[in-house]
Structure formats: C-alpha cells, structure tokens
Length: 199
Image (cartoon, rainbow, N blue to C red; front, top):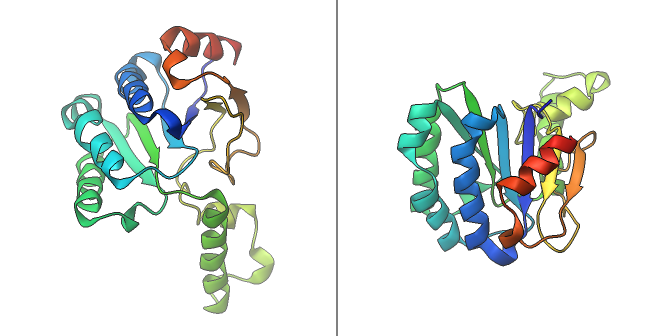
C-alpha cells in the first residue's frame, strides 16, 4: 500500500541533483499514484536557485495535463518580487485542480510555523472568535502553513546527515521516517521503489 502523502527532504549541498530528482518524480507522480507529494530542503535555498526551480523544473503544461494542484509552504512571499509573482501564477494556474497535489516547502522553519499558528490562535481568542478552552491540536493544525493537507505518511530524508532540521515539524508526529544517508546523486527510481515496497 502506497503512502497517501509522501514528503522528501533534500540536502541542500547538491541542489542541481535535487532539482533533477524533483523533475523526475513530478513526471512519475501520476504513474506512481501518490495523491500528495511534498518536496523540501534541510536549509534555505538562495533566491537564484528558487528562480531556477520555478523556471526550468516546474512545467506548466505538465501541471495542466495532469491536473496537479501546486502549493508553496513557508514564507515564500519574502522573496524578490519576480519570484513571488511566478509562485502566485503557478498557484492561480492550478487552483481548481484536485487530481493530485504537489507541494514545495521553501523559506521554511518548522518552529516558526508553530509560532505563527499560535499567534493566529491567540488573535482568535483575543477577538472572542475562539474560547481558550477550545484551543486544541486541531485548531493549531488549522492555522499551520499545511492546514489543508493530511500529514505525510512517509518522510524520506536524502543526504549524508540523518537530520530533518524541523522539516514539517508539526505534521511529522506520526510519520514514518526513512534516512537514506546517501548523496542525492545516488538516489534513483529503483531506490525509491525499494523504500516504497518496505512502507
């Protein structure tokens, strides 16, 4: 049985390799039957690399043909104007698609995500829109960056360092973890198949 939500966290030491895997997995998502696929990085990536990812690795035609809804989780609106505009265009282009979902975790800090969610909940309590006794795990989740996604069933961390560094911190509580401890260049479809077969 395949995971409903697969998340992959890349080591930023080989971004070109990571982008190549992302492009390959995007093309395989419809065939693999993974409803939700999330890509992230264990550290912030430079704005020029974000532009490269958007321009060369995310095909609008492919998203349209396969009805894939794309989302960006994190404080992506802090990038330069042209990057923010490109992200907004991709979100708008795919907003009505619901066959599959593709998420990119960019400019993200797991602890900050929880802090931001708590701030929103505090404002709701202060405005008498939420009783403090009704603050629950669900009300926190509803205000995270990933509020409308189920938590990942499986998280794969690529790279020599077996640390997630806060990747999807709120959502990873019950996720299965797989640390490859391999360089991005060593990861291929066969390796992914082995991991999924063990899931």
